Image (cartoon, rainbow, N blue to C red; front, side, top):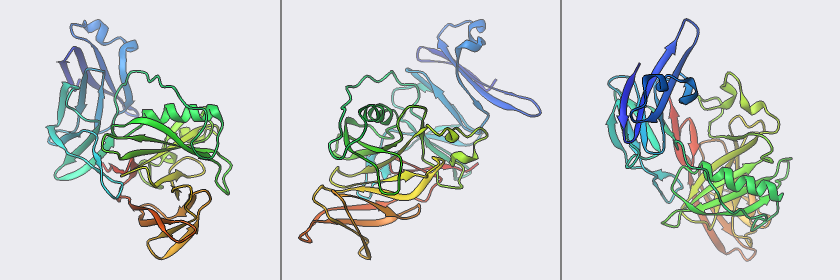
Length: 333
């Protein structure tokens, strides 16, 4: 037993179970006053995972998190988008064990041990079901209506930042690709946008692809790689200071990690994209693909047929193990 606590209206505990070959973490949250028999009922388990140095789980009203003794867990609310598309987060240190009401705790979590950041990731916790009216057409391009509806729903489940007003801004199939793509944007209160690229049909599971190839978040390192499902759809994300011009990294063809391709959606009248002043690519209907490995550091300038600049974007991907909505993820235990 790692901890047992009453938090808000929940009685919660975390425990590690292990033998010579396996180790798991079990988290349970039940109403305050729940009996010991209710707490150990396997049907009431709210989290079951491999035993890791850091675990966080919670219900609607409470959150618990545990890290190795002496480490510092920190939480941050949804951040603001900088001009370069990265997130600015404000962290609050919480110690090595967190048992607190959900209010005031953000979805971003960081663990620092001996002054070294060992983990940084987004944990959305349990959310009420989403019911939204989805469009059946994209604002630009085209895609299957059912795929658009799936993209609108799944993209709302993995924001990485506090957003609203989802829009299906583009749909289509890129040259050399067989899968269709739908790009959904959602707007934050300051006008910045979360960008979500949904690839596939949504007929099977949907994978959130954030990992850099070969790193700890590369899905091909999984013991049972879910990305081998040929029908799985993939989601990748980015952030931008406005919706004028967008750039979002696409997944690798097998869905295991991020690829070296950045999908750029500029204004529809843009005919060319200039990349850091040294190269150009043509745009079709304002859309094109930049090939650049992770992490990219680029200045993008979209121009029209008269050579007039109509939109600019700075892309500054951080050096990290993964990328979610412009924020670097780390997992370095």
